Amino acid sequence: MARFRRRTCIILLLFILFICSIMMALKTLRPDRAGFGDPFGLGLLPELQQRTVLLDSKQNSLNRAQGDTVTRVSNLHSIPVNTMKASMSPVKKLEEELSSPNYNFHIFYYTWYGNPQFDGKYIHWNHPLLPHWDPKIANNYPKGRHNPPEDIGANFYPELGSYSSKDPTVIEAHMKQMRSASTGVIVLSWYPPGMADENGEPTDDLVPVVLDYAHKYNLKVTFHIEPYKDRDDRSMYHNVKYIIDRYGSHPAFYRHKTSTGRLLPMFYVYDSYVTIPEIWANLLTVSGSQSIRNTPYDALFIALLVEERHKHDIHRSGFDGMYTYFATNGFSYGSSHHNWASLKAFCDSNNLMFIPSVGPGYIDTSIRPWNNHNTRNRVNGKYYETAFSAALLVRPEIISITSFNEWHEGTQIEKAVPKRTGQVVYLDYKPHKPNVYLELTQKWSEKYRKEQEQWLM
Figure (cartoon, rainbow, N blue to C red):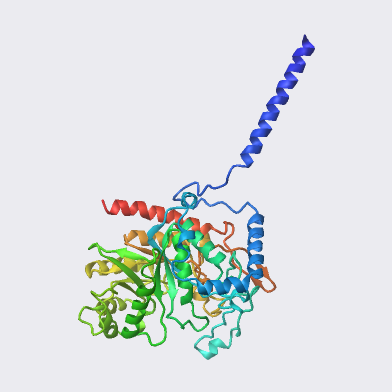
């Protein structure tokens, strides 16, 4: 009898151990989708997981891209607006996995990057080192340009590598990242057809593809009008007309609902202060000689404010609002957080929109090696959170984010990875994950949404 009891106990013990083993195995297989433990704290954990699967997937994508480059590039240029909509309508599963878009969170986006696989050469990743305007200072710093893919014109290194903005897999990855961050409106850097910045190539032909992929992720697209050659009231009228005629019927084209109930396109105008108020007034006031007001091409025009005096020029010019763009607290009057309350008060009293721009940090010494004094350390995300806190204090209708992928100035929130090549050691987001700034953006998007509900009560 005693032997039978001993055998029964041993069998029972083995059975319990077996059940425990099964439970532990199942626990390790659970999906790791948790965000921050504290929704409004920094509680970010160091990266503990290997990215082997992700890197393998990326390598497979690159191999496919290289094997089918000519076909994909030619197809990309021949895609008309709206042709991809049927295959790109938002998918229910996608909607369940991603945060809802916040159309009051606008994020600056650049499509000026290129590589040999898609563009025949590197574009922007090989950015030149810009000399200081004082020759005596310039002589103390290196000259030349960067040599991708190992050496790029940035202090951080993208998880996607030295990508091409024409690569559809890159565009889609970007849309998914922006949507995961709970942003809602992409502010697309734009030059008129045939024009580009001094280091780039024309990119207007990419707009239809960006719109289609944005629509897939329920994002909207507005335009960041860059300071192209001979930009004035006449050329702006024609270019606004071009954008609205060509892209205005796309479901991803952004329109903002005003306090009067009108739905109007919105245009951010970079370096608007370069043009005198009298020229802008021709376009933006009802009595202007080139007036766009009360026409089918009327819109909300948002000027860049750098110096304090610009607020009066912006008002005289007929702009509808102002934004601050720069992610460097203290660099300019407009980018200094402590000035936002007075700027918001000025805008409120003059029926203007105030759109503060927040950023995760700033560093551009890879292209301006003499500009160390304007570097703003990210402090593991705390700099970004401080900027969001300052923005929420003034209760803005819209917050803009500088930027998704301006890698040259180190303001990107796109995923970055550690990298060391020869003499170059790139900065990274450690001890946090490559998506830490997307998660922080999503956190503050939710906080902003909740606070807006309180403001409107």
